[in-house]
Image (tube, rainbow, N blue to C red; front, side, top):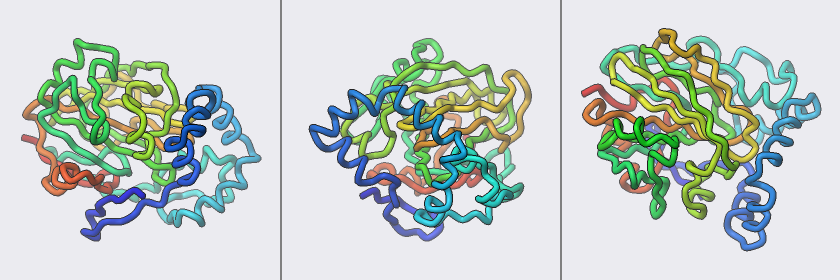
Length: 295
């Protein structure tokens, strides 16, 4: 059971998890863990499933998925019957103006829809994955030099579950450097996995880039793949000016994670998000909504 805080209702809700029974068996039983290590975490497993989700045969999964998880299609231009395959549906773009983007230069917005946990004054060698498990930033990006600039900074972890909008965006105006790819495994990023597997973020396939933000200094973007995530697709143009809210990229099928790192004394995160994180709860956020302020 995954309990999270909904900022709009000011109440706690229980997340409806796709493949809940499967995840619990895989990550909580001895036989499931063996199956995980031998097959599920391997690239070939996620690649084959990703290929299936690119075929017309996967289209029949779309309508039951929408129905079972109460996904509102009013936010999207295309009718579900017009998607060519499940991956087209999964990475669907929003209608224009479906999300309100706060364009105030002093306001930090969420780059994605998802569940957020926030940590300030981070120790680069003990960044929290989940209670009881930590990792180092240099291991996450395989770069000790670039990681040092975020010492004592802020870490924001956005978990995108399979039912979420799966595109991620820039939080400010600025210029983004080319992205770096790191090969890895394909563990789930669901809390069920994070509670049972150490260093998941450092083990999984991931991509990272430095965004030179005009308002918030340098921001490290890290996109992390997961079980059945066929691809991380970067759609931005490195070295070109981007605007606040512009798309940076998207994930194909699977739950995924976007992590942002900020330099020290650049931002403050909204108090309700920090409060929920300290009490062990994620906060539901939407792309474009305010989550903090410039210092």
